[in-house]
Image (tube, rainbow, N blue to C red; front, side, top):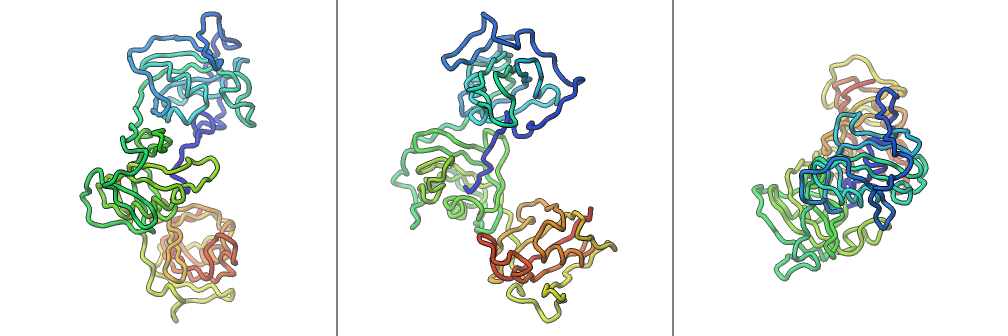
Amino acid sequence: MKSLRNPVFCWLLCAVAGVQLSLAEAIPAPPDVAAPPADAAVTESGLASKVLVPGTGTEHPAAADSVTVHYTGWTTDGKMFDSSSTRGKPATFPLNRVIAGWTEGLQLMVVGETRRFWIPETLAYKGQQGRPQGMLVFDVELLEMTQAPKAPADVAAPPEDAAKTESGLASKVIKAGTGSEHPSAADTVSVHYSGWTTDGNMFDSSLTRGQPAKFPLDQVIAGWTEGVQLMVVGETRRFWIPEELAYAGRAGAPAGMLVFDVELLEIVAAPKAPADVAAPPADAEVTDSGLASKVLSAGTGSTHPTASNRVTVHYSGWTTDGKMFDSSVARGEPATFGLGQVIAGWTEGLQLMVEGETRRFWIPQKLAYAGRAGAPAGMLVFDVELIKIQ
C-alpha cells in the first residue's frame, strides 16, 4: 500500500523514543554492564548473551513471529535509556521489526526465560543520530510469542482457479463472506491481513500485531484499492498483486509480486457528495474573499474561534465533480489542528462557526491549494462540524 500501517520501530518501539527517565525510576545497571563476562555465549555476529532465568517453554520464536517482552536497556557506562518495566507495560512487536541484535537474540530464547544481551553497535543503532550509542546491554524476559501466519502453498504464483482482472490482479476466495455489499474506493475498511513475497518471506501482518488495520481504500496500493472492492464483509481472499499494482520498485518497499491474505472485517461508507457540490447555491453566504458557505446544522456555542486557536473538527472534502479526497468521518477520528496552519479558506471559514455547528464551504482554488502540485485542484467543497475550540 502507499502505506499499510507499516510498522516502523525507531528504537525498539516508536512509542519509547525520547523517553526521559528520572533517577527514581531508573533500574540499576548490572555489574557486568561494561563488557560481556567470560561465561557469556557469543554468536558469529558478535552478539553476546547469558541466561539469567531459564525458561519454561520449549519453542523458540522465528524472525517473523511477534513477541511480548519486558526489558531494560543500558549503555555500557551504566546509564538506563529505556525500560518497559518502569512503564509497567510489556512491549509487543514483530521480531523482524527491531534492531538486528534483538531479531537474532530473541530467537535464542524460550517463553519464561530472562537473558542478558551485550549488543555491539553494528547490531544496534550503528551510530544513528539521536539513538543510544556504542554497545548496548539489555535484560529481556520473553513473556509470550505469537507465531506468524505460514506462507500459503501457492505463494509463488496464482493457481489456475484464481480469478484475474484486466489489470493483472489475481485472487481466490479462501472463506466466503456474510455481507452483501462491496466497499467503494472512497470507503474506509477494517481488515486483518498478512503479506508475503513470492519466496514465502512474510513482510507484514496485522495478525502478529494483534490489531486490525483501518484505512481509506483509495489511499493504499492499487492492488488493494482494486482487490478489496471485490470483497464483502466476513470474506477472506488471497491476492497475487503484480509489482506494478504494488510498490512499483519503490526503494525500501517489498519488491516483485506480493501475496496477501485479507479478511474484510468492516466497511465504513464514505460520506456522499452533496447535491450542490458543483457550485454554491443561491442562499449561500459569500465573503469578500469569495468564500461561500451555508449552515447545515446550528451550533450550541456562542464563541467563534480566532486564527490563533486550535480546533477539533469532523470534516469531509470533495472536488466539484463529487469525488471525495479526504474525510475524518471515514477514518472515524476527528482532526485537531491550529487554525492558522491550514488552507486560507479553512482559516477564514471556521472563524464564522461556533461549537456544535456544521457548515458547508465552497472554497475557491486561490483560498485552497492554489494549484499546488499533488493537491486537490480547483474549488473544493467541505462539510465541517466544529466540535471544540481550544
